[in-house]
Image 1 (cartoon, one colour):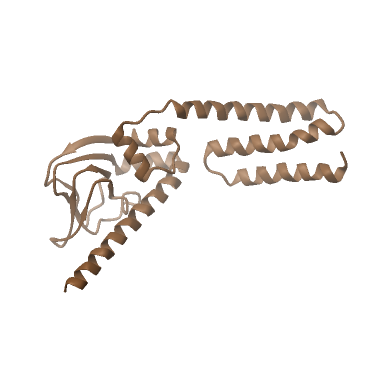
Image 2 (cartoon, one colour; image 1 turned 90 degrees about the vertical axis):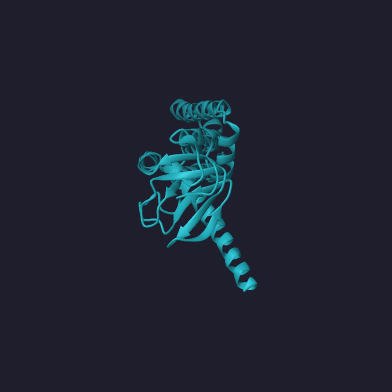
Length: 225
């Protein structure tokens, strides 16, 4: 193999390693390392034999493929209940099964009664809530300004930074909830930055959905007037 042809494999392996440097999720790092080692295999096979290079490339490839296989098997063994699967699908779909299982396990499932206040206006959200079943109302200055239905996240706008809520959220019916205390959530995400990144994306989608719903209500009220 000519030096020119060899250079393509060297550059390919180095570019893959560079791309891997920007990856946060550990499983993607493993994929990048395995891919870089795979690209380097032709260098070992077709250039002058070098036992040291060959052993190192083969070791990198085998170790990372083995770890990826173990991660894949672990994910296949994770199980979710129906309500957990709905939470994951609606808000945590950027997480793999293992990461979603770990995050959901930080919280608790409860049944709550109509009238219970989840978040108070001008106070920090005590928890992040997921409304699996039921309805909730949003009040500002004592006036109802919105309603939340099944599948809504509650508190995602303020729970991570501890800022005060702009409205009071109270249950308008008996409800089924998942919640995780704000302090516990922040500590968990600080220890798992890859999960934090995906969760921020889910929060952004939830907020866009609420904004679109609010705009629709405003437009309906304006047309009715």
